[in-house]
Image (cartoon, rainbow, N blue to C red):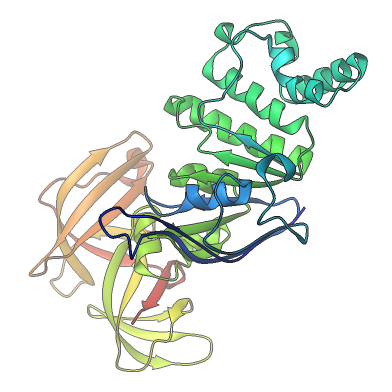
Length: 364
């Protein structure tokens, strides 16, 4: 089922400024396709959870409309919207077995017991819980409890599945495992799903598309690749992973590419946001893993700097490189350091990058 948000805004009252209120969501427009997993991503207070609550019906929008499969559900109560929510607290009943928890919604619908048992066993098999039929919640790990919560939400065959930071209570290793599992299960059932998180890696793993939000407004909607490699502004570029922002001047522009001067090097860039014009000063976004670092032999050897920080992480090494006579720093990552070698703190280096890995931001 598709979901559409049309001009959604939500304001909360502010006792100190009753005439103004607090803008939690401002003019949000989204079209979510049937079967998609779309993640609302952003820092705390960006409006992502409020947006999810408006979709679920737990919050009423100040203005705008919510559609599920072309039905206007803006005024429909939560229990009539045919959605299911997976909470970060799991919300599993401690006095019921795994099977009873999963089948609880079907019991409320007065389904025959033999049908409930069959559907429960089917969903438990598909979610890897088949050996835990009679276990109690206190006999389960955090990951198993989250699977129970997910199975309970899916078994009711909702039109839309909603996730409210479902992995925030799990340890780091288990989070990595569960986000892959959630993606697999969602694709198996093909349920249109909306996922809220502040974890960038989580969003990149589970999503067909990501909605980046800040201060109540949608900043960018795109695939994980588009969000990471083609950010539309500095907020998105800086929020998603690490980014180097390099000053450059536009030399020439065609329909296919933009020629820039960056340091002493001329580059031909084929990816940009905004409308860079000849003579403009722009920012060029290059991710740390796309920087090529080598020992500097010449003061005019590209972009120069000095290694100020080295962090060894096993498969990779992270470097901070301070530019000479400038306040900017580069962040670089090199992989397989045993073969590629190490740089030491104090080493003079030059930095370069492949033009295909760069993206121009022409804001303002």
